[in-house]
Length: 324
Image (cartoon, rainbow, N blue to C red; front, side, top):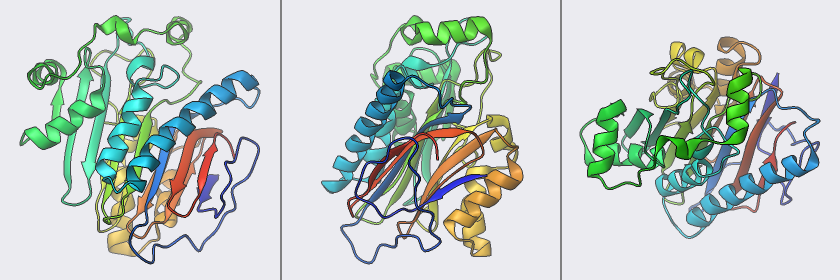
């Protein structure tokens, strides 16, 4: 079992270092406090990865985390922070979202994303989009500019054009790495998804998740990332959650929502709820999640060999890790 909960540190931890497990999570005692956690996917991540590649991942995660931390530090909202972090990761070809999205069985790309505001459970999502450069931003527009939650395929594309979001040809999402992966039908590398959860100084939670899906997937397949309650959830009364892994399992077990439900109805701690869902409902090697709660506790729980991830808060913690 792999799990991590708050470590009080001011250093940036690299691979091979170990976070200090703690059952007494960091609690916010006054305002002007914030916390943000990001992930870039889980999976079978080899420790034999060349140093240059490790450094590239750490650099990207650090930059993404800095973007979110800066927004929160300057009094910005958790909603803005999670959107901008995920947007940055969508533009980075190393991750399976946006520019780095995997190929479908037809050699195309279909992208999914969702975002949720813990203040009033407002949420928006898109699925199966092919020409939207940043699906996470379109998901936010669905939340803010329509009475709907989820738009898919052509309808989402048409809405994107109406909203004047940046459009790109589908081959914009091509990358040599993903092409090679598709050609070899390799599905062991990572269950790539990117996500971010945050609590801002105003006490509001938000979550965002974006993905290119599963390599060689049947066109039209939709996983958990754009499904509110499966891969993404946020409620100011409990927590904010973003998941990564075998999407079908997260949908079947409503993983993101059930983290919140266990806290709300069973009085579970954030970490206990996360452990319960990942280790008892998601088969070994098939997923993980990041979460923060209303008090500023955070949990990173996964049952794979690794998870690209980072955490920062107003107390000076800034950590980037891949493995335990």
